[in-house]
Image 1 (cartoon, rainbow, N blue to C red):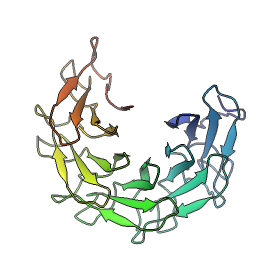
Image 2 (spheres, rainbow, N blue to C red):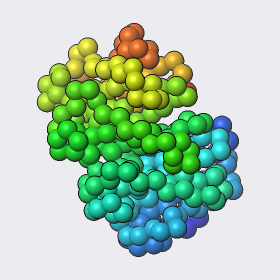
Image 3 (tube, rainbow, N blue to C red):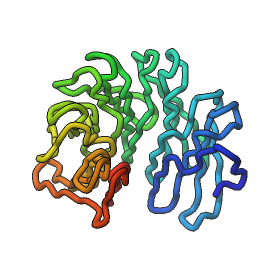
Image 4 (cartoon, helix red, strand yellow):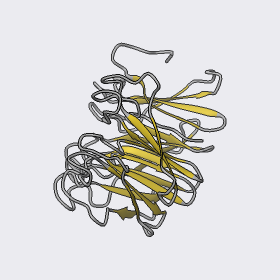
Amino acid sequence: TASDGAANDAFGYSVAMSDTHIAVGARGDDDAGDNSGSVYVYNTDGTGEVKITPSDGAADDQFGYSVAMSDTKIVVGAYTDDDGGSESGSVYVYNLDGTGEVKITASDHAASDYFGQSVAMSDTHIAVGASGDDDSGASSGSVYVYNLDGTGELKITASDHAASDYFGVSVAMSDTKIVVGAFGNDDGGSMSGSVYVYNLDGTGEVKLTASDGAGGDLFGYSVAMSDTHIAVGAYGDDDSGSGSGSAYVYNLDGTGEVKITASDGADNDQFGRSVALN
């Protein structure tokens, strides 16, 4: 628990881990105004607390809404930051001790893009989801890739992007691949969802949909990846009752689907709302 924890801090809203440290987002912390947000870093035994707040933090930025880390860096999303218009969003990169702040905003930022709603990190790159971006219709969504110093911006959009796909609501990456969730995609019915896999330069698109996808499954609301596999959450799936949820595992090329449901799944369990892989 945070040493200065208080009501409505939402400590634990986001978490990330390296081999040596844990990062915890507290998007509701109020140090720089209501819901300005903060992030805490700990050793894996819970000692050594370091609190990070942005140098330009402001009310309702929700810094810490998303967080990712490598062995040397932390990236933090503040998806309702207003630098490029109301709720355009931003992300920040830090050393593990909270020093070396780098702030990143999209070169084409606009209101309600939600840049930073999701973040992912490798040893060399950062991926940032902006599910509210409107390039192909309202909330079609996009993902941006950067070097760790914020340079080298590359924007990725789905080849079949459409309004309300929410491409970028979730993102994960390895040293060679990026996986992006688009839970609003309608290929298997309204809000059935889909996931896309890319090389780091945005090439090589592979689209994944569940073999038994159906409307309201929200496949892609959460994603994770390792060097060999992808995990996808579909917390709206109804196999064990309305909103019982499920998760799927794939090879990087989209083959080898394995579906996982809880042995005691029940209505509204939302199994798959979050997923992780090692």
